[in-house]
Length: 493
Image (tube, rainbow, N blue to C red; front, side):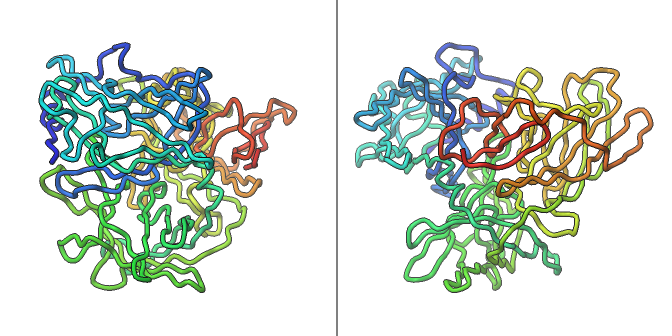
């Protein structure tokens, strides 16, 4: 049904980037930026329709009722926005078909967004395109859902000069306001066995129930604590469908959750939910949990997990363990490579929820902010970097449990003396901060527990969203991180 010509194009043109064209919106437009979780079914030639669930996305609402949606398909290779019009009276947002999201300049191929027919085609012939717009309904609870019909059940991106050359298609799209989800979360103490290990590993997970027959678990695959797995009840028993996306490689090949039996990939992983204790167990028999990746024709098994036990737990504010130094290097390109490890645990070794943790950096004892001017891969200042944040260009993760951070600091002054980092834990309006790891560049020595820089607590109050990004205009009823001077707390505005 789908021909993935994009892989061969990228292989031929590995260095291509989107052309600078007014038709392609690559920068975040001006307007109110709201956080959503996107859910949709994303087609893969090998796995079929994969669940791309609860991926964090930003939608921009401009003052003139223009709405900008992020391109969700091949979004690492093709980061862009498409424009829609919000009719508040009708409670609809209409996105016109044919908007460009990418351009291959050497072969003169633009890539555009379209509604697709039941065969996954963007038009009735190679040279004709459907003009059916994408129409979204806006519910009273803020959920934005894409309409579909028997004639146009899907949407996709394709060669804008050849309607048959579809690069990726998807269906069943909805955007859920992030606060609708985050306000419902409860936490689990999560033990599991990784690979061939015999000892259990402990972490935390979060989850909530949607209706009577659906549960969502964040961090069900421990290596991807920000990703979700959907559990569905059928005939009184829960299971998780295989091929739910957990992450993507830089070339947009998926890393997906899957059940695993030997070398086979069953379609579901049975999951037991004790309705009295709310404990979740899975992968304690022959069928275990894995992550797999696909290039559209074959798959590789990446990780294996078994003996999963998620037990509801009450979490408390406590001091996190300090990061530990690994290495420092000033490389030939002028980047400052700083590598450290940070387990998501408190000083007693107890696991902490990763979505409540963030990093704060210091240069010569002064708080350091990652800005778009120096880090073109982000759209807003980051004073706090979420524990789960990863961008392979300057801030990536590694290690068996993603405990390592590889940070490539840009444009630091030649006379910088120290680099510091601390782990910040914010929960229920309380904030605890680890001892600070400080690396002295001249001597190559490491210290911790450095006194905080004196900051005026009467200084300006600043708000950040739960991803650590600054928010200029907080919206009533939403959850934010409030910072004034050296005091940080999570608040409902």
